Length: 157
Image 1 (cartoon, one colour):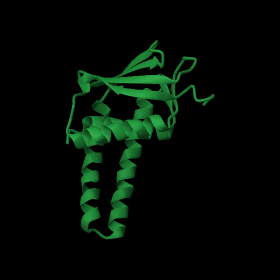
Image 2: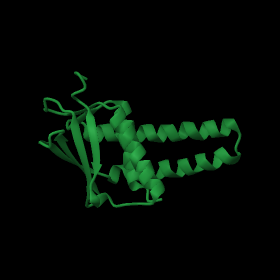
Image 3: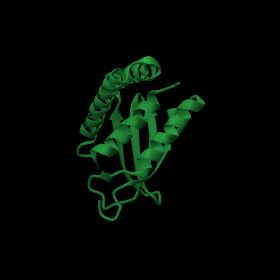
Image 4: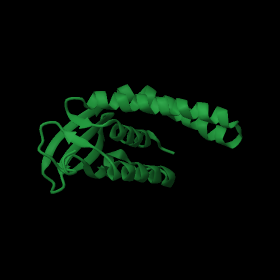
């Protein structure tokens, strides 16, 4: 990453994303904060940002509208969410198990569930990297943060 030019400086959720419960809105804000705080984001063929990512939903597709901080259009990429449906569903199910386990399960059971949760999260992150291949270069940690954001966009609370 050359002097931080290949990074996101802002993520904006379009009105098409819709509003949710205060808890979900909080989780979205945390996911965006974490993503902006540390990321590597390089639109292929562009000289550098930092970038502003505007996200919207159109026909069950996530639209990445990438701009420079000054607002100049860099690229628009449309990402089908279909490949993520099963992963996100599995992720939510294991997260529920994890939160239930925290209340009453043994530490070893909690750890086992958490390992499964991380595994599914990693699968979603790798899928995201694959779907962005040739369009946007992100490192694995950025893909993890982006996948977290995709998950909270699905979550309605």
